[in-house]
Length: 134
Length: 130
Image 1 (cartoon, chains in turn blue, green):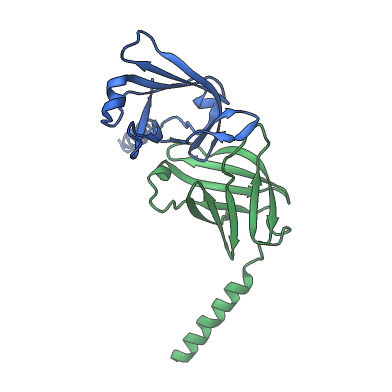
Image 2 (cartoon, rainbow over the protein chains, first blue to last red):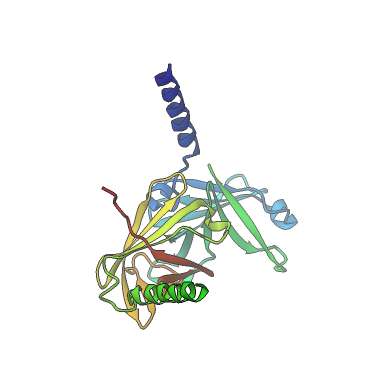
């Protein structure tokens, strides 16, 4: 009876620990091959009325594509293919691999999100775009 | 009695200070591991359990991250230089970091600054009780 109780407790703790597990997106090999989408523009009326979504497609351990889908267009458009590197919880995206000074704003890696701060449509402040894995 | 206690405390403090190795000496850092597990309530760093630097030699250092509910992972081996009390990290050009993190040695702490965040690392030793 006591053994059964121990087994049950061990099984419950194993189950709860495996449920808490989430992928380590600070690892480029984990991030590679994933697609992340933002379709909530923080109530910015211009972005909300113009775009369906923004997307990041991590093609490999060092290259990423940016895509947008406008409301008045039938399909998404590729904006750019850039390079990236990860340090700590931050993804730095580079336009040019050979010139690390040409970096775009930083993407912050969260538990199951990526977030990115941009100027709002009127350039009077910033909004944080939150991307979720597709 | 009170005097004795104060003198003893003073002696212990002096001993403690004098026992701190001079980590600004390049020969002292190799073989040491430094860990930060207190991210000062930062929301961004709330997913991280700890971060470690393992100084392998006089010019190379390993960076390890442990995210909560994940095993510790070695992120990279970097090069470093030590000038006065400042450690500068270098990555090869194919994997640039912008801006470069900065580490300042302050007594028994390493103050690590990156992207506006500064965290304190303390020497981490594993004690094995046999």
